[in-house]
Image: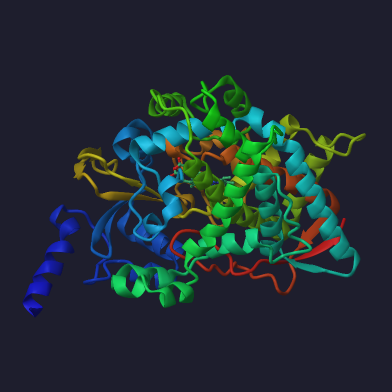
Length: 524
Ligand code: HEM
């Protein structure tokens, strides 16, 4: 028996060495999954990148997975050969949760293509402009709440909580036209249920992978781990009620739910984000360092030929849930890291205050959409934040057929076999001194229009790339830029004794989280 297990594991864990691919030494049953859980995913990714370079193999339990960080191969995987790598790798935890069967991030093949083609028009700059007043209102509520706190003597804030409240308010307003009052009611169900779905529980996630089914299907276990399926129910029921109400009434709203319902009813001709509308908006921002003709072509090809032009009710529900869940943590943490760096770099904060101050209309004390998108330092500060702290540590894909990859280092060819997952270590690439000299320093200048051409394409990937990149990139940048521009006009942030320098991360299996981010705050 012992011999049988030994030879089975020996065979499985020799997959990479049999193919001459180096990588960290796996252990039977666990593969290479233990170390990132115990030490933090970002630290281990850096360590392996330094030791094994831009092409190495790991084992997730018994499953071989290829790690790729060579920019030429990244372009091949994400853009040029998109169709051969169109799906994300399978996820045995998420794929069991019913709602994920219809969400864009987990959908596969033709199902993904159809949903993406139908909801892409929802995120064009034209549609976002209609939502601008809703986001502006959330900014006003946020600043009024902070003003109340600071006026009554508050001198320190945990920006992670603060920006979490703002982000959830924006997402609830823009998805459902619903105000959740997160400042007077911090335990509102939107925030608590979204946290329940995406709070990282690395050890429990790991146990769910290895424990027998009779334990993980047991109700007691579900209660113990605060089963995300229970939290998803809240979003589904909430969205379902709203859909029923809207179908009965003729009132139209300027929110994502309305756009998704309309996509269900109308024969929508716009199937890509590459319409004139979005190209014009992209030209306003220096953020897009990888974009090129190949990228646009790949997107056009990937989404062409969709015939069925309706979203089912389950698909609408899936996307509503997804926007609340994935949009919350990523955007809130980006804003928190950004404020943290501004507090630690007062000279950059001063420059940003000066740039944004000029952009506000003196009469209305407001800033319009185009002006906001055009501010170079604001764009550079957010880009550098996303470089240093990419919320999604790795991108994932799966080979849909056998594909030959050529390694840049020695020109050797490697055949990746059908079904083998790939991961692109975004965090490690963003911290490579060959791509970003002095990578631990916060230097927004790297992204200013006069310098950003020095950035090598496919070494800046906070939103992924290719036809399967973050569909809401423009939306996320908009809600971050607006609140930052407004906040720093009224408040000054600073480092205080409780500020953790460096940040202490609470890294889980998917996202990069700070444990807390305490900063000093005063009226400026
Ligand atoms: C700063 C904020 C955000 C960051 C850094 C971010 C990052 C990412 C990344 C890295 C991916 C994977 C891309 C790839 O595999 O190439 C992704 C996918 C996605 N994101 Fe975001 N995201 C952010 C905000 C949002 C928001 C606010 C929403 C929704 C309202 C959203 C919705 C999505 C969806 C639906 C996908 C899946 C796209 C697909 O599979 O076709 N994200 N995001």
